[in-house]
Length: 285
Ligand SMILES: O=C(O)C(=O)Cc1ccccc1
Image 1 (cartoon, rainbow, N blue to C red):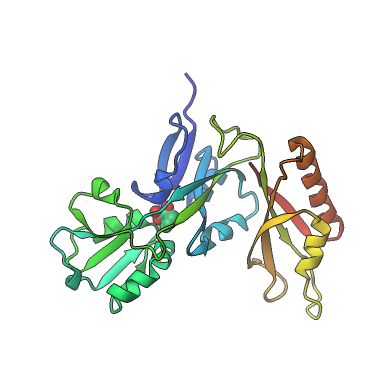
Image 2: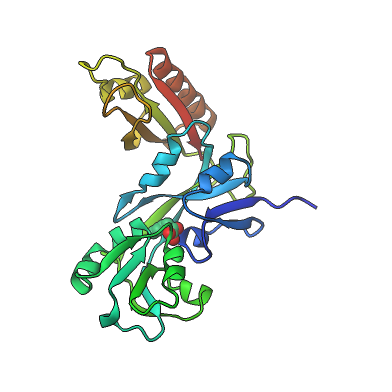
């Protein structure tokens, strides 16, 4: 018997992370708060599902904050999920009773228009996840949660007041599949398509001269790869104010041979280090 391949996701049951389509052989385990990357780094799980970007609200800040840490793991795949938000309340609670709406920051952000139009006076409460919000409103007489309709089957006593409340009908979230090391082999099928087509690189400048802030352009010029997306978060423990860490994704051209492409990426990372900046390969998939 093989040991099960354990994948952690942002819990409790009923989150969008839980609904990401993974191979059936995986053993799925919910973890609380934003502890998914910690569970992967500490080898409590083989891999984890982390939300990376939403088509309405943008990058998931807490994911990039986790990716700033040393030894954060290695992105081995991506999965895109269609997200349809609902407003759920305990059975019997009416629209006019609602004073407080709870959810994950991303879900509150994806439904800003709906909230402003239908609940301009309600207080908004940020929760660790959408399903944590659903669980928290159980038994309340004046609170509702923004979450997936699946939460009505996970938690008894909730009903749907509104469906499809995100600001655009088309709403997708992209998740990274994070493993502990580059050498972890994910069980097939691979995500999303066979053949490695993307990589994620973390870049930061090392500069002690406050009068000459590092130029992003210099980092990217040293990297000299066709960057397809760029994210930025404050650098932790930097010697200067407002120094940033950059996360770049590079997409492989169809004409590029996979192994040659990976060698090129490794060489580009060495080149950034040669000019005195930091570069780390955080994923290939
Ligand atoms: O809280 C959840 O359900 C998550 O998985 C994070 C999230 C929240 C909103 C949209 C997509 C992912």
